[in-house]
Structure formats: structure tokens, C-alpha cells
Amino acid sequence: MSATSFNPIQLQQNAMTSANQPLALKQGQVFHGTIKQLYPDQMAEIQVGNQKFIAKLEVPLKTGDAHFFQVTGTNPQTELKVATGPMAQASSPNQQINQLLESMNLPKTAEMQQLLGHFMKEQLPISKEQLMQAEMWLKALPEGISKADALQVIQKMIELKMPMTNDVFQALLSGQKTSGMAMTMDNFAQLLARDTTLSEVLKQNLMQQVQAIAKPFEIETGSLILARAIQSLTNDAAAMSEKMQALTILKEAGILPQQATWQNWTNINDPKAAQPMQQAGQVVQTILASKPENVSQLIEQLKSWTTNQNFLTNEQKLQLNQLMDRFNQLPVSKQTLEIFAKQMQEQLIKAFAQNTADRLFTQDANALSSKEHLLSLIRQEATTPLQNEALMRNLVKTSVESPQPMIQQIVTQADALVQNSVDSKAMQHALKTVLKNLGISYEATLGNKSADIQMITHQLKPQLHTLLQESNITPQLREAAEMLMTRMNGMQLSSGENGHQHQLIMQVPLEFFGKKMDATLQWNGRMKEDGKIDANYARVLFYLQMASMQETVIDMQVQNRVVTVTIFNENSDIQPLAEPLKAALKMGLAEKDYQLSGVFIKQFDKGQTEKGSTVVEQREEQSGVDIRV
Image (cartoon, rainbow, N blue to C red; front, top):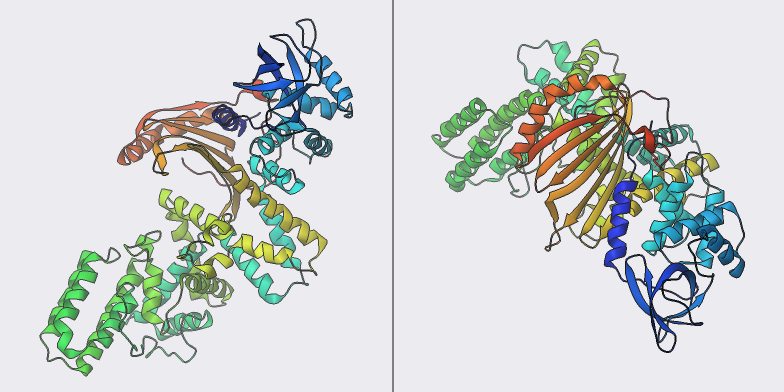
């Protein structure tokens, strides 16, 4: 079985690149071309692929002859030496290749002949040094990599004028793979966990990022545990033992201070200055910072914030507005402002704790989640998004390790709620979480003045850079880290722009509720004149390795906002399973102003098994999870 590989899009892209860019020749390069026209003084028009140029020949030749040429000079004009005799109808390309090997004193190995045959077919110039380096790579290919794939990588390096280094070659080879990322991550995680030589800080930071990638829904699990614990604390009918267990787990996780008691755990300090009113905690702080003479303006701000807060139900908004109206009728003093702030805090805590489960993967207009509102209401000091995530992960860890039956029940319920809440929005959230924590393109964001440097430096890729600088790292861990770094670099090198065309490669190791899968996305589209992506035209290939459906490729083509989806899978029984989902897909696309042309389910083309697909070159023994597309 063989699925569509990256090659179809890449070959189209390479063809467009070759046609749009002028042929740039350098001294010493060889290429295969045809003489189209002869001129005086041994000048000739040479055709290489779709391009023509004028050059001076060392010896006179005949029109129509095809030769291997070597560039002997480029200034002030291109000068060529004939490296082989003319290719007559009765002769074969192999004869010309053998002549070239002799004239350039190149080794007559199978790999060298394969290289020259490939570049002869593709009509691309290549130097002797590049040929020698490429031959070494072909002789020592990693297991599971075909020579056809390696030739495509070498061709890309030549076309895009990339450095002919082993690091670039290996990264591009990795960028073509559509499986194995999850296994690479897992191997690195296991070696890191067993390592005893690294500094505790570096190891802890790396482990946190590996955990964040392996469990993309852990923050949501923590959010539910937080909400449930707070509900216990605010429930007047709850038993004291339940309140104390909830209080203890929040203190152990570092969310509440150690001196907090069940009577005063919501205490807040007077603010030093007014704050922008975004988080719910800032609403309370704004009340405390207000002066009695500015109450009218304060009430107007509070009502506006409440109206625009999509985490609150209409009933909760009504209750808050009633509280504001009652306060507005009282004589205003510092004491009444403090009472009002306390009442607002209590109502907001109850509201956000109650609504967390229903809005698990939702953010408000300020890109804030329910957990961030809750944390801002119960913590005395402000926290960054990175610190909030660390608190949630620590809360999950502390709760899982708790011996208390009630806490274990909360964890079980939270896991079940997250699992039942997984939908398209949750999958989008998971992909964003994994890609953010991988930090594949972190270098590009460093120059952005608005970038959160602390967030960037905690991503996995920059931490791998730090790890590889360590002198006491074990050879096994270094090799695993380098392999993971190579996979990430391969995504970057395989992505990029060619004129108006743009290609993006993403390999994402996904793990949901203990089940692992590899997901690879290859997007190819074009850019508009203003530099933005043209959403009317695109081709997207999804490569999925799943437990039940096994290998699956989804080919989505967009032409003038008309979408055609083709699903490749060996299982012929998935057709009836797909039928009920087509209506939902059509409706979802229509909401984004796209029209679904059709969904087609096909088996892989057996005849293309030998054509260089990398999709099934490697297999892993692992469990997986199937997702709806």
C-alpha cells in the first residue's frame, strides 16, 4: 500500500520555479542541453528545459544536437565546453553519462550514474563538487529512505541554492516524512526522564514542554478541577470535610497561599493603581481603586464589561446588574466600595466556576479563558499566561497524586468531561497548543517587538538548542535531541515561498487520552499582490496514522472557493460511515463561504507503490485515535 507523498505538489512547484526564474550558471557546473540555433563567432542558442540562453562554444557544433556542457566561464559572457558527444537517435543517455564520467574523472558508481541521469532528465546544472557530495549521501541513506526521495531532496537543495551540508540534507529528508514524529518525541522523552546528568532546572523545563505536547488537553483538565474545587468552597451546603479537601488541593498546587483558610481564601489586597478592566479580577480591583465621586462612571464601566462578557449567562448578567443597581442607591464611601467589591467578587467566582465546563475551549473578546478569569479572582498577585498554564498542570499532578477519594472523583469527572467535549474546536485548540509548545519557527518571532520572549524561550526547540550546548549530555540523549531538532528543521526547510506560491509543512505528534497518532499537514497555495494568502485557491494534504483506520490521506483541493475532498484509505467499509458527516462538512464550509463539490473515498493506487512515497516507509507499533474530518 502506498499513499500520495509530498512529491506531487513539490514537483509542480519546482516546475513553476524553474519556468519563472532565469537559469543562473556558475563556473564548473555541468548540465544537459540542446543547441537550438547557431550564430557567428561560435555563439549559439542553448535550450535547457523550458529556458534558452546565448553562450559561446569552444568548438563548432550542429543545430539539434544534445550534449552535456560544462561551464568554463561566465564573464563577460557564458562560455561552454562540450563534455560529451552528440546524443544521436541510436545512442542512449547512458552512453552520454559514461562519456561525462570519463571526461570529468568521476567515479563510475551506480549512485553517480543515477545522479547524472536524474539531473539530465530534470535539465538542471550541477557542479562536480555537488555530485561528489550527493553520491556520498546516496551511498549512506538512512533505513526507510528511498533513493528517489533523496534525489528529490538533492534537487531542491540545488534549485534553492541551499548549503550542500549534511545537516540540511538530513533535515529535508525528515521534512518529507509523514510518520515517526510521535515515536521520535517518545524516544526523547524516555531518555530525558532517565537522565541524571543534566541540571535540574534544564531537565524540569524540558520535561514540562514534553508534557505540554504529550497532553494538549491537560490545561482544560486542570481548569475543570479548579472550577470544581471552587464550587465546593462556595457551596454553603457542602460538608466541611469537602471544603477542606478542596482548599488543601488548591494550596498544594500553589494557587492559594499557604495561610489561606476556608473563611478568608477570597481575600484581596487593595490595588496600588487602577488597571485595565479585562480579567474578572481586574473588575474587582477597579472597584477598590475607585473614588466615591466617580461611582457613576464606575457603574457604567462595570455594566459595559458585564454586557460584553460571553462567559456569563443572561441570568448571571441580570444578577450582577441588580447588584450594581442596589449599590448605586446607597451612600458611597470607601467602606461601601469594599463591601460592593467583595460581593462582586463572590458572584463572579461562582459564575465562572459554574460556566467553565460548558465553555472549555472558548475565549472571550480579550482572548481570555474561564480559568484565567477564575485565577485572577482568587490570586492576590497577577500571573502571566505561562504561569497560569504551569499552575493548571501542577494542579492536575497534585490532584492525581492526592490520596483523597473526593479529589480522585473530581479528577475522573474532569477527564470524562474533557473527553466528551472534544470537537472540531477542541482539535483546533490541540493543534495550536502542540505547535506553540514545539516552537518550530521560534526564530522568526524573535524579531517581533510584541513577542513574549519568556513564552518563546520556554518552547521546546529553543530549549533543545540549550540542551545541545551542554557538555555533559549523554550520547544517547544527544542523538535523540538532534533527531528531534532535525525533524523540526526539516519542516522549516520544506516550507517556504516561491514567487506567489507558498508551501507549508507541519508534522504534529498528537496524544489524546493515552492514544498516540502522527498527523502531517501539507498546504500549498498562492499569495496575493498584497502579500496575504489567497483563500480562494489551495491544496491541502492531511496524512494521518490512526489505530482503527490505519494510514489515511485526505486531499483537499480548493478552486475559486469550491472544495473537493478525496480520502485515501485501504478500508472499503468507511463509505457508509462518511455519509452522515458530509452534510455537516457542507454546512461548515458554507459558513465560511466555501462550496463543497464532493467527497470521494478511494483506495491507494497500487501502481504507484514504487514511485517514491515516504508515507509508509516507516511504521511504528503504537496505539492511535481516529478523528472525524
